[in-house]
Image (cartoon, rainbow, N blue to C red; front, side):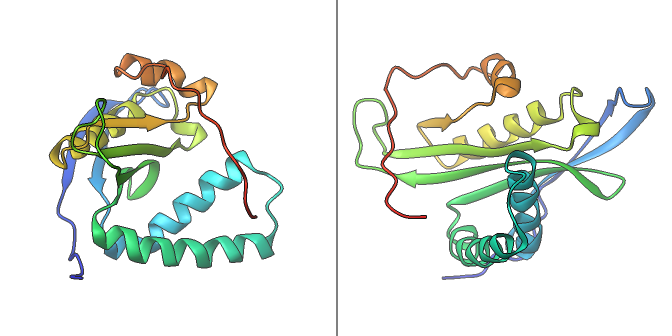
Length: 180
């Protein structure tokens, strides 16, 4: 396994942010292994937003599990993160997990992506930032020959995904919980 070096995938976009109605310079970039601590912090922020009952002990366990996960999957290229920065502060993020399944009629090459952790901090929402990040994720998926991208949409995000071409899947999803 070779370690990925510093990422240089940076895209500068000059857009109008509705927060104060002045032009702001937003930086979109792909995260790399050197950003592992950022991956962890952003994932924990996402979890805290939707699960307010997470205590410090559980956060520490999550952090250790996330470190192990990211160490393995960032290097392999199976895990991609895109962020948006404003004034050197991360304001939005999305992740893509790439898995390979036995091919079938819907995905002949077997490569499937799962979009998750699409998150923009509340004060920056409704500015199209997540849409731009998802577009970048889609481009990364295309580069890796991913056949389909799945996601679980929140009500708030559903319209964004539909505008980008996502649709409700005809397959009925089910889950069996085996452990905590």
